[in-house]
Length: 265
Image (cartoon, rainbow, N blue to C red; front, side, top):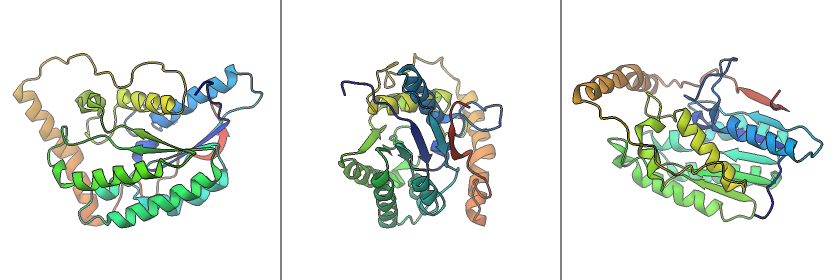
């Protein structure tokens, strides 16, 4: 693109990835997240251009949501908000569950993208990072992840759809890109995803989001073992218990920004 694109509004929907889990906590108790970071940059670009309007931003994403829940609980609201820029990420929570019906995931994701793209000036979708080098046991879900990535790529062939492809980026193999739970991005991970989105939209690069971090100090086997045991106790077992009892971390949780309000306030 020859000129920096200006957006006057942004609506983000999805699960914990878009909610911003494990980024820094804001004074209101919500996580910041990559979507907030993108909105901050877009608001600044609009102000610098003297466009004469205020940037508005809504984030309907809620942690733990499956793609059907995203479509049912956030889809109508997102369409009604009529944002110029809409971001949609979902399906990985489905893929991580045994017995995932990927055909259902594709149908639901495709129909939702169709609805959102029909109204938005620009729809942003995502291909997830490659977990195969980072997560033990990820071989079970790799066929579904690769299939979903291909499907999202096909959706990205439409004129007003942009796919942010995080898959072939070795920097995301670094544990420092991830929070203690090893499922959600750290603040540095969210910073990188935000920059990836902004560059995909055609904004000037602020830094190279693909560049590896400097080498980390070595960690002893004993320290790694203690970290693994803590991870199992604090994060894995509660996740398993929720699956067994049919509960979700997002049950009863409202969206952090349900209205398309001025941003920053």
